[in-house]
Image (tube, rainbow, N blue to C red):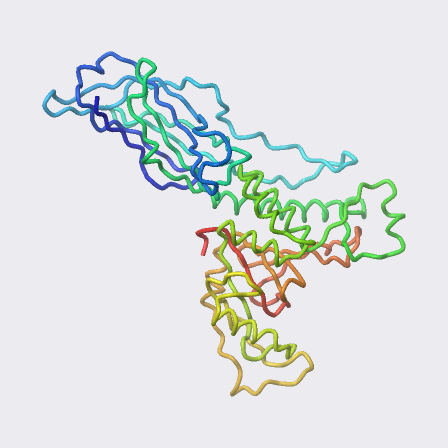
Length: 406
């Protein structure tokens, strides 16, 4: 028996409403009065091409009948008496109660976004109520933050229709960026709150060598952090909350000896896009020829220390003087260009690599978040936030943003 069902739209973002409809059945009399089972799956067609994880992970199952409100010659088919049959969770995880290791409450409440979509069935009256379908994910499958959704229609236990060759894609990259931002702000807020409350934060920088450190650690569960550590903790947490553990494991596998340049190859492998930045490609404030040279390489070879560059953000903060105080003649100063930085401010999250890996940070809607690793557990500014366009002092580098953001 030939049949046609459709799930629309073909491409959706996390949280969007999908609509399932029946388009046609070759022998309408054969379906009258029968109950259909409609099963929705997260298909293993991601970065690993189905080689990892279990195929066709069931997300939800529904029971429904199909009615014809048209004629025999011109049928108009729709779903009726739709009910959900599975018992998978449909509620978002509860807001976590967060405390310090000593039991002190923490005020910052991250708002994690769980990958999901809403589903409605085309009914004679329009559409049914929507159902929330949570992505359960597979810890072994690299999805690239995009989940392939398919469905099967069964009658009397036999497959009546299989959509696997025409699956739809659910893009949850926006959820990844949101969760990474929430994680980065959480780590910063937690430390700063405890500095204010008890004059002792939760972390200290990897280059902090104050003699008092061992004394400070007594009675406190202090943890060391660094510029790359802050980034890894934030992005790793963001991946975990977005059901993308396998993607993060793959990214981390590129990292060698803690070097930022190596893990940035991992971001590239996961589809993140590289944006070379340089506030003034002609007159570097520190007169270091690395900056004009790195721009030349980015422009001619589309590379920054071996990392692919897809676009350049340049000349957004031209110099009028050098660091040694010498003034740059007004006639030779670089014209300011704010077009790309304006676009950058619309990007919710990215990771940064400066001076060939000497420093790493994160950028969120035009502000840079970093760890000053010489600071100690009593310092509020162990974690810092500065405006990229006007305050960021690292003169050239690369920003990598999740797929599809730029």
